[in-house]
Structure formats: structure tokens, C-alpha cells
Amino acid sequence: MLNGKGIRLYTANRIAESIPYFEQAADHLPERISVNMNAAQALMFYIKNHGRDDQMLVKVRHYLDICKNLNPENEKHQKLEAIYTGLT
Image 1 (tube, rainbow, N blue to C red):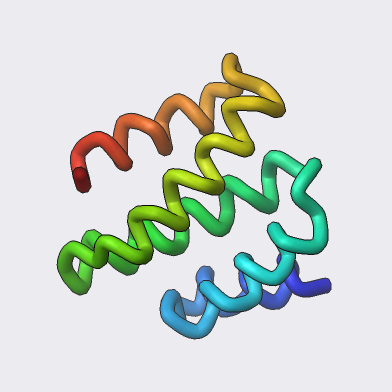
Image 2 (cartoon, rainbow, N blue to C red):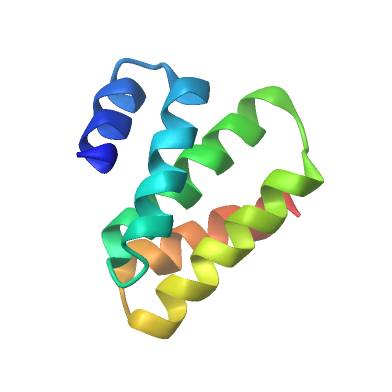
């Protein structure tokens, strides 16, 4: 439910509003790689468009580390890691 609301906001280009929903979803479902990737992606998109935010980057790293532990070979995770590297 939280992840779905985040997706609807994100796809409506309401990125800042989507972030709390993705973060709550990831907190409630840490074993779901897709939920953690959504949180990381929304945060990185926000950073890319609004400038560097070290607190957000720490959160991104946290979500990406969870994804890596769940499935390091996941193709989307690898793409998100490359985006993260470009932001740091």
C-alpha cells in the first residue's frame, strides 16, 4: 500500500512527496528488494534535480546495501549503484 502510493506519486512527477512513502514501505518490508530500490531511486532522482544532500545520500547507501545483500546480481540494483557513484 505504501509502496503503491509512492509509485503513483513518483510517476506523477511528485518525487518529494513520494519519498516518505517509499521510506516507510522499505522500513516495513526490508526483505523486498523492489521496495528498497524504489526508495533509493526516488531519493537519487530528487538529489539529481535539487543538488547534493548528504543525509539523503546516506539513506540511499542504506537502501542500496540492503539490495546488495538481497541480490547483488540484480540488474536494476547495479544500474542504481552506477547512478549513486555519479552522485557521490
